[in-house]
Structure formats: structure tokens, C-alpha cells
Length: 213
Image (cartoon, rainbow, N blue to C red; front, side, top):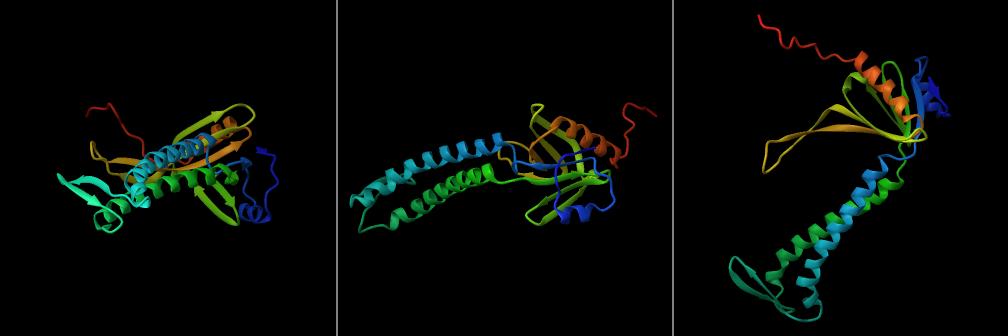
């Protein structure tokens, strides 16, 4: 058993007499690489859409006219004729807000703590900011990713639940829900324990592949 973390009393009470396979406190809510990627993507998205803000709205702020083409027809908008630019301005503003939202979420996730994680023979318990979530091992698919080193690492556990994402140029894709245990000691040992428990609690019936009757 790996237990080198002092647990909150609420969590201790919830665990009760059940054995603890491991008990850790995560440094972050998600892996650092994921937060950095979100920040970079949000920054690029915001910078790109801001170009349209300067092109379309910059001249209006200077009291000048804006010329653009809509459905093959040249349109002129100006300080006294803002109607033609309203819809494009709303769309551009929406895209800018999406970029700012991604950038803000990336920065927020960079500093958000992951809370406590306790593994037991029956499931995984997460406790953070007074909120507790207990997940049975059978809810995990067994697809686990682990990265880092012997000091600290990140664990990504895929679940059986998720959502279907529509794609224009291909079939719909299933995106599973994930649980991150990020920035913890003994990540590779914890991954082995999680894999063992998931396999023990797997309720998927075995398939008789290759058998011809």
C-alpha cells in the first residue's frame, strides 16, 4: 500500500474500514502539457480572429468606411450605416470570445489543483474542495496512459462513458470521459495498481473469437 498523504477527515470517514491501495494528492487537475496546449491554441485562435477585428472594425473606429463583398455584391458600411456590418461583427466577436475562453480556461487549469485520490479494492475516490466522487473500477475501460519519471508523473484513465462527436468528413467518433491523476509520486506504481483493479472488476463477458461451430 502506498500512503504518504494526510487525508481530510471527510475522506477518511467515507473510506471507512476499506483497505487503501494508494492515497495521493494531485498537484494539478490535468497534465501540464494539456494546459499548455490549451493556452497556446487559445492564444493562436485569439490572435488570428483579432486580425478580422482590426480589418472590419478598425476603420469604423477611425470614422472610415469598410468595403467588403457579401454574396458577390460589394457592401459599404460606415459610421452612418452600421447595418451591413452588424452580423459580421457579431460573428467575429463570437470567435474572439471563444479564443479568450480557451485561453482563460488553459490558464485556470494550469493552477487548478487535482485534489485527493484514493484507490481501494472496489473503486477510485476523488475528494476536492469538499466534493467527493467515488467511481467503481468496472466503470473504467482499462485504457490507461502514464507519463513522467520516478519522482512525479501523470495518469490518464479512460472510462466506458463518454459522448459521440459529429465529424463532417468522417463517421461519428466516440470520445470517452477521462480521469486525470496529475503530478503525483509513484505514478507508474499507481498505474499498475489501477490496471490490476480494473481487470479484477471487469464485467465484460469473454468472447470466443476464432471458434467455428
